Length: 172
Image (tube, rainbow, N blue to C red; front, side, top):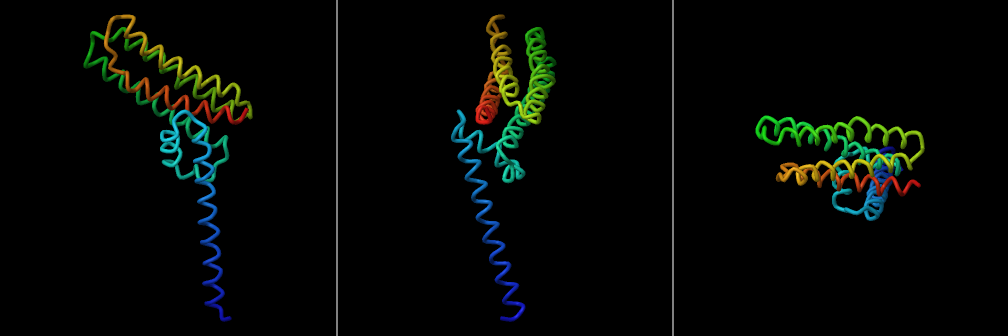
């Protein structure tokens, strides 16, 4: 066997192993997502991040928590924009802003720290609080007899936080 045949054989075996490894990692992600309340949402979040292919369960949880943070930041930006375009809703929007500042500034960092320190129970608590906070924002509009312009964002936050919480529960 000459050198080029050996090289081709080596490359074929290498690519086959890489393909099987990638398929196994995708299977791990799919199996993880099957245990969450929203399989498709979970899958879309995790597959959007190429690093998830090499992550363990804690890593997958951290990726979803990062999606919670991103949703929180986008919601805060939307709240600021709505205060300008819908000034009549400013007091209620300010309440929601306070709620989402807690999500981004307290709940997410608490969850990240808990996961990094190997204490998933506190991480689960952070995501449970996030769902409560998004519901509180939505309820505040109802309490003031107003139609919420944040209904979709609040529901999205609740859904993503529940996916994160489900993955974190697998670590308990």
